[in-house]
Image 1: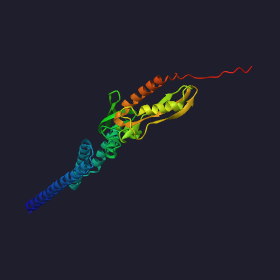
Image 2: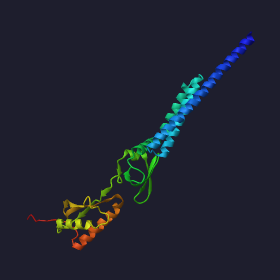
Image 3: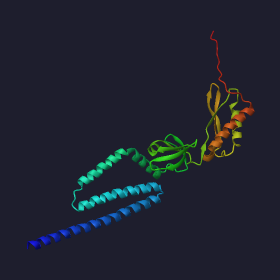
Image 4: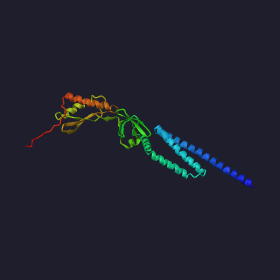
Length: 269
């Protein structure tokens, strides 16, 4: 009788354990299927939004790891294992990693915003984070910029995103800014008319908007002219240097004297 009861107890225990194992397997299979489905939908959505492929992979891997940890905790709880301590340990480890990698995580978050909001793209000429140059790569943690003197510079995404961003490539044209000092003996109207005519001959200067030549201010040496031709972004430096050369040649041909300060000293006695 006792043997039969013992045997029956063992059989019941085996059945219960077997059912638990089968239930755990079902939870695992269904959980993995749901995780893969969620990650697949996320990747499809991000790819349609043309999000950087490296960011998609990183987000997918992070979600898979976090979801698998949650799945393991759920399976342990199904078996009746106390998971509070385990969950607290995982949370503590996460907090420690977050504190240690706070800067990296901040750069990562800023990089995600740069990719999603797209204030600039690879190939744009920008000023950001105190650096001016051509964008070569928008990474997960840093943005690579080639400066005007052809130096590859890596700027943390946090610094880029937190600072003002100037995108010189967004608009189809930009204005070249020059200031020209005239001598008091020179007629400003004549000088302005001369420059307006000559600026039309500079290659790649746009006819619309028309180049601007106006008096900017007056100084003890004479008036200062603002010379402002417009050009396409890729022609900026060519137009900039050609405008300087044009000013020098035009004033030399006209025989304009070099600017000098003029002071009047009167004897009160």
